[in-house]
Image 1 (cartoon, rainbow, N blue to C red):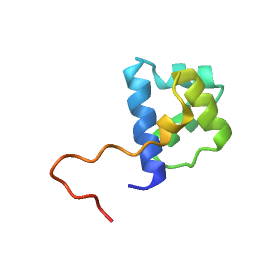
Image 2 (cartoon, rainbow, N blue to C red):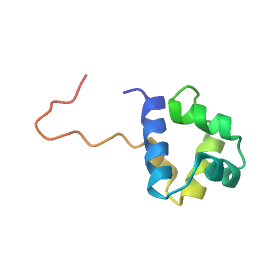
Image 3 (tube, rainbow, N blue to C red):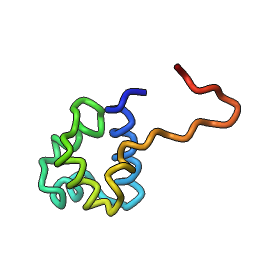
Image 4 (tube, rainbow, N blue to C red):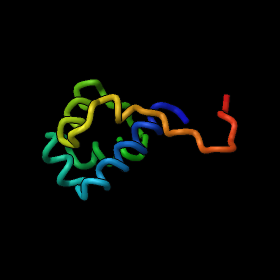
Length: 79
């Protein structure tokens, strides 16, 4: 999984866990909804400034948006 996919997955997961719509998150982070949508699709890379804004609105550390998913038991890590 490339870093864009990791970021996109975490962003979507955290947004949904907080019950925020894309419109709400985009408004609070002062970015466009279409840009947020592209980030969640993994189409764009996010700058550190955007990672910081999104993390602040989601009330998580920026590293949480880049954290790799835990590997599932019984599966070997892919190389």
